[in-house]
Length: 413
Image: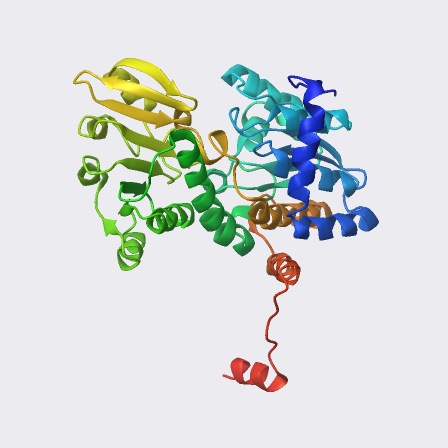
């Protein structure tokens, strides 16, 4: 199939980036040793669409070590690292992605990645599933099933299951404990603020931070903001999560009430139009807006552009929208994922867990997928526990073990 990349000469830098993260991903290191012997993907084609940077590249290499033929693309045009693409291409992997792709180019990269008719897909946000079901069903003629990485993608898959439009089995990787308890909370919590602080070079201490949502990603963002010394406000639509936020020590209110109070706003809800025109009209001068949800629809750029009399690039990754009254509203990363567009994405140690779940779930699909009817499936508990135990051992940690008497006590009616 070949490759669609920017510059193959960037390969040496990309290789150094991949080798660096490999040093901090002990679970994938262990799986690499196992896969080299077992070859669980021998004779299978695997298509990957995840933010295409060094940690994802290692996942692609792990699958290939397991015997797969791999084609890989990015899940966001602004998160792709051209040097990483070049490194993979230099070693013979099919790569279709480049940084800053237009919507049309991004769509074509997805199409070309699926063109080799994979047996297994690893998706991030449902881009593969959408194309396979709505545009090119012929590319799914050999498809056994796949895995979904994100909260947003899981929501889209559940809608398809409800509507009867999911034609193959998918694993809900995002819902595994080793994914959402660590990737979503600790990964997003750290990497979102890395991106915000790197791009703005502003203080967080003493600022009022408004976090939209209190799911696993949002609570990580809120906790890190509090740890940095911010005054945190949480907005929610779910009464139970709102109560959680309140009992965790945060102020809770509607976005309409929070809009004039915040200095920094971070969205991570998975929904659209969380911050819209009526909020922009009452925000402070020089307010900062960032999004940590998968798609760039949480902050309404349509409303923001309609209200602005001028838009200027204030510094890399930050556009200033000048309002008629002279106020400036600063949007980071064009409303796309701030943690990976304006930062380096999740730490390698966190993605070690998430991508281990991906790799073992893909192996599960390879082994069992042909016998599964179309549906969305939870990751088997034994896979989740296996990843947790490998990680604990790599950290030099251990667990207590129940005695037979304790097991009998706990199982007694």
